[in-house]
Length: 334
Image 1 (tube, rainbow, N blue to C red):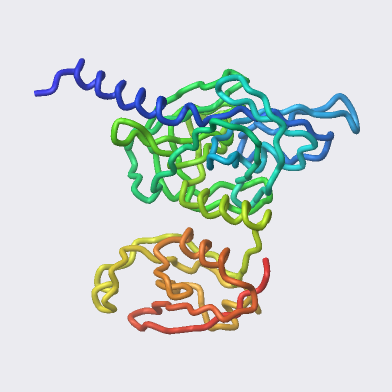
Image 2 (cartoon, one colour):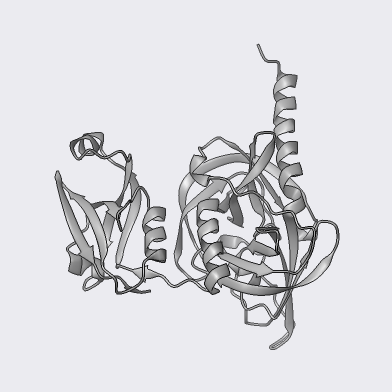
């Protein structure tokens, strides 16, 4: 039987291994903007620039980020760098660099900045889809300017929604009790793995005055958005005009239609005159496929809409009762 001391040693070893693997990639961001320029942090995140002394006065802010590629691309939160007038990145070894904003996406609260530096160690991004409630995770960041601060906790829940600075709901958010504070935003949420650690989320917010109600954008979303920002500097999305939620798919329906997926997107509302309405989608339908790919979650649906050009036909497979329907929508720019 495993003793308590052995369990604690194993816990400590997992956290230490994760920190040693990822902490060299974690950076501090210092941001200067003009009063009234930047939007606030989502859901009480509080890491955006603070109030200035008057109209037009510069405002100072700070946050966290992590090196994404060895040629200097850094992932952080949109609300940390949005409308920044000046950006600086401080590496763990104290080197201080002026940074350039490559692009930011308030809809997912993600952004990419770039520095020109040598000897960078990029973090390894893991598969956020492998997470389960109860898994040990570690948050690394710079709360209140204290560099390389480590907190640990568990995945409290998956599939949460969080309202971003743009007003859009960010879907499929990871909830954790690994404590976050102002300055943590943009830092990595790390899953101990193989004696080291991989990044499975980008810490984005905590709820006040709640205790340890903290949230992170999943690495699957971060990887997709960061690649698009690096390529184009912005995100152009399609929209079909519906609201939905990720739900379990009834096993009898999955078996009847020979589906391997266990989840689908349940349509809760359709906007009159929108592409989904014109295609024949109704509230109460289950979307099981979008653009030829399984729609196991809203994240899958958003991923397809992010990549799909507006105005091009988009195939939708839905279940309505026991019937399977194949529909086609013409997405519009959102």
